[in-house]
Amino acid sequence: MEYKHILVAIELSQDTNILIDRATFFANKLDADLSFVYIDGTHGEIYPELVDIKQHTGELPFNEVAVKQLRDFEAYSEHNIKHLFMGTGDLTDKLKETVAANQVDFLICGHHHDFWSKIISHSKQLIDKSPVDILVVPIE
Image (cartoon, rainbow, N blue to C red):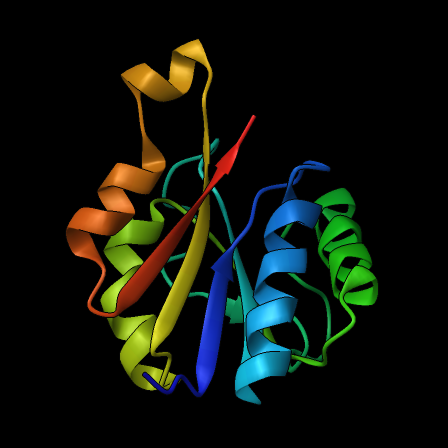
């Protein structure tokens, strides 16, 4: 199978480096584009659109600390990042449109093996709604 654009669903924690390393490996092997998406689900649906903070000029409508962390993850990656998407609400609601609009054909996300993740699994929701192949990386 040949993938051309990999999208990584990240969170603002050091565990994200595991996902970035895995995604970078695949992107380098496949000569694919690599993009990140972060959804701040703590405030509900404040902004209906995803914003590409790499392309956006002017002031961003997001928490500056979160934007800085995303830029730090971009700097951590050993592969060029095509898009750095950021939004609010629920990623599964935005996934189909984002994938289609950006020709994404492979999605990578993480799954924690803790108590709360067994009750509320965001990766399961992504699997149920993903229109493309998906890799779920276990995170301890």
